[in-house]
Length: 140
Image (cartoon, rainbow, N blue to C red; front, side):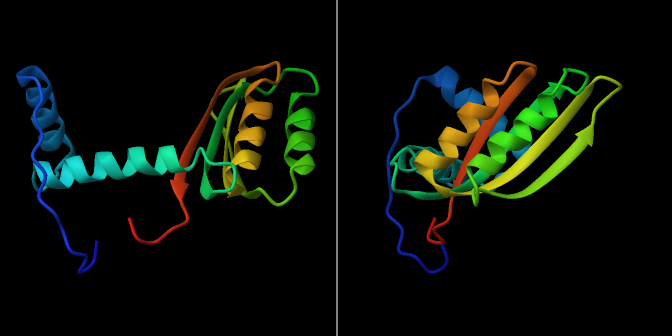
C-alpha cells in the first residue's frame, strides 16, 4: 500500500477473540492492530478472488508422501506434465528414510492450478497436500 489512500474501519468483536488477536499481534511482531487486520483481510480477499476460474494466480502446492510407495513419484510427475505450464519450479526434500516433501511453485488460471492440486492430493500414497494461493496482482 505505497501511497495508497486509506480508510478508517471500526470493527466489533468478542473480547476473547480480541485477546487472541492481540496475542497473535505480539507473537508475529505486527506494528499495530490495523496492520494485522489489514493483512488478514487481504489474504482472505485473495483467497476468495482466486476461486474464479479465470483469475490468474500463483502459489505453492506442498506434498508429503512415502517415496517407497511403488510408482508414486512417476505418477506425480505424470500429473504435473499433463498440466503443462502450471508448474514453474519444484523443490524436493528428503524428510526421513521414508518421507519426502515436494513444494511446487505454480502459476496459471485458477481452475487449472486447483485441478493440479486436487489431482496430486488424491494420488494413493500422498499423506498431505496443501495448496497455498497468492495473487499475481501488485496492488495488495
